[in-house]
Amino acid sequence: MTERLHAFVEKLREKNRDWVTDVVEGHGEVTVFVPKEHIVDACVFLRDEHQFDMLADLCGGDLGPEEEPRFAVNYHLFSTTHHNRLRLKVRLSEDDPHVATVTSVWKTANWHERETYDFFGIIFDGHPDLRRILLPSDFDGFALRKDYPLRGYEPYSLN
Image (tube, rainbow, N blue to C red; front, side):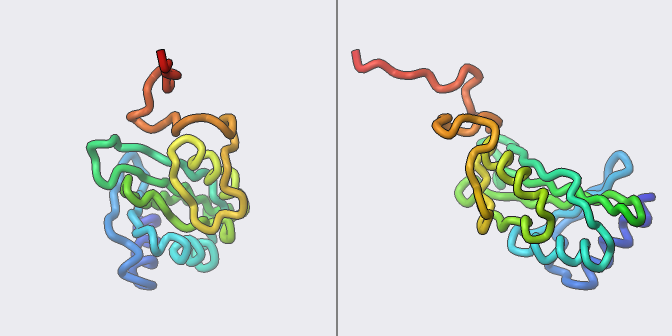
């Protein structure tokens, strides 16, 4: 199965070598690392040219404040035509946790990107309604960041 997935990776490289910076294979899955400035184009290409017509999931990850780049956004693509899965991954620095939205490619990205923003503070530029989706709007911080305190931020006293 991974041979078929590597064929899609090669198609990405043929279309634009800059779209693929690394490829990792594990547990029968292939992950393609895509620079953040190319994620929308790579997604459109895979949807339009290779029938990856479903964004099954989009989620964030925090490698920790000591890592650089610190954050990752994972795009889990699925084809309802040929039943293959492919993961794209964008790495983002703590100083610039911005990536373009893919809501114009798949409408379901709207909710996934809001959740990722809510928990990790990753900003999806161009998103039509980027605001918290699960936590209260006045929640302090981003609860799934590795440096978020286990008990939350304690209110301080001026005494």
